[in-house]
Length: 423
Image (cartoon, rainbow, N blue to C red; front, side):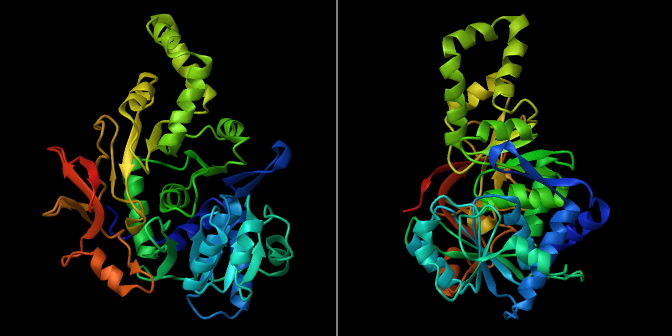
């Protein structure tokens, strides 16, 4: 792996200077319209917003919240926060008011970006009165300062701000399924290591296309869409809504598509609703028709250009994996968690094993503890939990391995299988 690792801001400056006019993001609007952002435009807007944030004279490394569905402004706001010398705190766009209040209060957020949301009226009571809010163009109606007004007023921040590898970049709050959400502190160095290793595994380049629709507040999407595109320089498309998802897929024609089991199953069910399995089996047995049917099905899903497809967050049933494999699409399962920036294990083309989440990604050490717990160590592993040194100590072994809380076993080729949870 790269020993002279570039940090996220280095990559922003790189694309700003080398491909300013190349398309970076495509954002759908109502009525089937889209707005496109070149690298130059995206960085310019981020620099202007960074100027505004600097004008607020917040203490260095202040926490700034982001609550929105995925959109181009989510990524530009993240960059602006970094450029201004602060720390981003993403919130899931489905949180209730109590959790919104807990996260913003615990992180001591001074500012909150508010974007595309379905239930803002339910969330809004959770935002403390002291928090300054800025609205994205696609946000629900509100009386906040707007992104467009701010970038029209403020000039771009000119300098090449330097943020060090060990500086905090973001605090990602876990879903809180077992108590209060925990703030996972991740550094620019964590990000750079995860991005570099992901590039090595995925073998992606600037000509890829990805559709961003899984929450950017989750490290999975943050690593494999925001960071991957930032490091490889490829084109990111955003989804408009569930109603437009099929059209969004066809517009993007993703070459890389990462999803979760429920969506892979939904895709499968949609195909079988129109073409029952028995009929599909018969057609696949006819040599002349076989290839045409496979291409037609994948094209109907927007996946005919996909050279790599993955699944994460939960195990995918073996019959579903086999079904896609029969169509010529190998789904690669992976494993990761907020605490290691979703950078841990993945299956590789031609080396996947059903029921296993794959091999350690580059630079990841894995071992099984005395009680069967999966222990992981890598430079992508979190700095610790925000304001919780005791929980941080409990989560690491004496030699620095992260206790995942999952039980597992490793086969002779180094592939990991999750066998349960620690009690």
